[in-house]
Image (cartoon, rainbow, N blue to C red; front, top):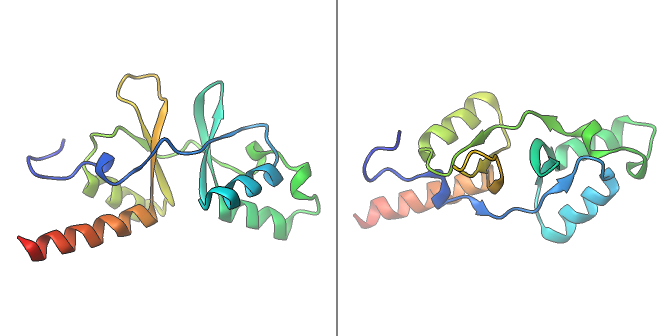
Length: 140
């Protein structure tokens, strides 16, 4: 539960993130990440998030697999069961969970219960939140 005056994760998330299908290739994912300048893509199957693919996941496959990126499906390299939270979750709780479990990001899913991804909160977003909160603290 968010206390009065406490920021919600939705304040700092990246809204409407790019996504990728589970059966796309890592080559397609790498191209999409490069074009968009992102390091994480929610992985969808049937419109629902089933995992997260990171730049690091692609790098591991690139360095360890004898197959090329065009031969590996996203589902083979993604992190399954992503950390997902509603947009109303307290920012400090999300950041604490990411820190404790070494999560690179949290998927923000709608409160309607259908699990649609409406945003992503990354380590970069967390640093943005920290800078904003420090700046705000100096002003107040």
